[in-house]
Image (tube, rainbow, N blue to C red; front, side):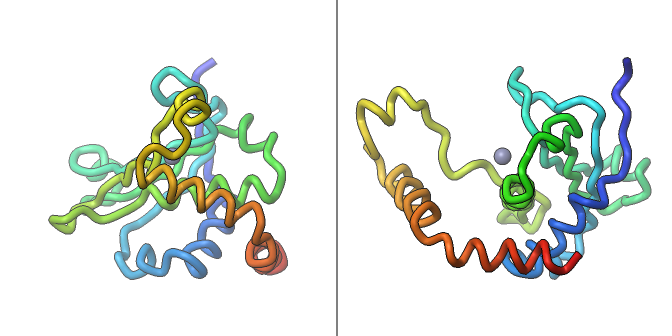
Length: 159
Ligand SMILES: [Zn+2]
């Protein structure tokens, strides 16, 4: 069956609250962001994922009615439905981190802070600085849950 797309207002609602709390610059840039569900989970490098952050510029943006470009968060409905409410918020937060502005003021998809293999981490630990920063961040997120609980409450309560 062909892929089917539909608006994703649930994702948009979470995103707008996250932008308010963590990413006000996304509001300031005034670049449209479209949130859509896809009937199939997207694939990245041959691996199924929950969603994909894309920038659309040029010809396709023009056809979509946004000649100056837009960001799109495409979310796989099957994967999204299997997430817990907290995971949904974390997922949307992750994808919003991909939306950025390059050095020339152009729209950019920001790459992940870390790309690594479990096997290497197990053997070599945090063998370069960015890995240690990430390891510290995971530890902070795991131990300091009060800030997260507060934020999640704020997002879910506004419904
Ligand atoms: Zn990502």
